[in-house]
Each structure stands twice: as structure tokens, then as C-alpha cells.
Length: 169
Image (cartoon, rainbow, N blue to C red; front, side, top):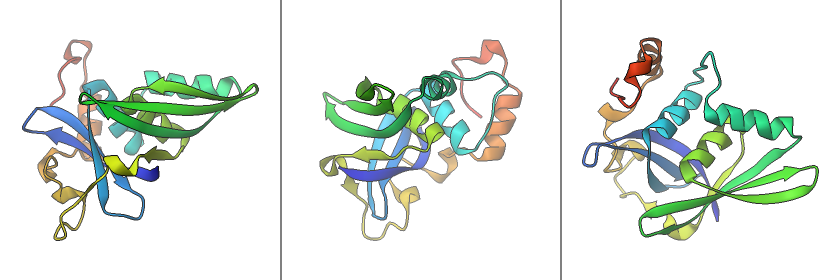
């Protein structure tokens, strides 16, 4: 297992799906994971330190972990099977360490909130081309598809209940 960080989050225009791109810490290899809209919104909100008036589900998970006297030791992307990614959250509490099965997208969103490290098997990482300077050159990521903090803030300020299910800032 190698430690990875969230390098980018964007929209894969070919599938119209959100993609979180994890990058090997100190390396060039990446792991793209296609995720759902709510998880993408939660991750980008945390990356841009945007706070909502009421807690989102991942904020609630953070509060529960801390409130029960626990810590999130690490998140591990464990495998991919039939195009589905799997992850585990390693929680430590008063009664010891517990491994919790979770979706990678949820695990990443919670790890970002608790400053926990994220790990992935080396075998799942792919190497960027030699001429690629950064993750922005990765094929599913176009520079136009990444949200800026200003775009996210403007979108969230104008969000209405009937807008849920739509995400096109």
C-alpha cells in the first residue's frame, strides 16, 4: 500500500460522471475513481473549506467518530472488482481498532475532514505519461471541468431544494 492524496476532482465528459483523482504522495502515479454527485460535492466542499449552515452526512460521520472518542487512523482503497472500488476505514476507539467497510468516495470525504491518511494498493495506480507535468494532463481531467472555490461558492449560495439532483455550476 502506498499513501495517496486527493489531487483533483472533476467531471469525466465521456461518461458525465465525477472523478476523484488520487495521486501517489511524492510520485507520479494516479488512481482515478468514478464517484457520485453527492460525494463529489462533499469532497470539493471540504477541499475548498466551504462550510454549510447544517452538517452534511460526512460532517455527521466526523462528529460521531470524535464524539464517541474515536479517531480515523487511515483509509485504505482495498481493491476493484467488476468496476466497483472497495475501501476500508480503520477506526480506533476506546475498545480498540475496528475495520469498517465503506465506499471509497465516502471514505475519502471523511478522511479529508479528519486529516487521516489515504492508502491504495500499488497495483491499482497508473503512471502518467513522461511528458505530463501534473494530474491536469490526465486524460479524464480537462482543466475546464475542475471547480474553483469561487464557482463552488456561487453554486452553493444559489442552491434551492428543487435543484438537488442537478449539478452544473
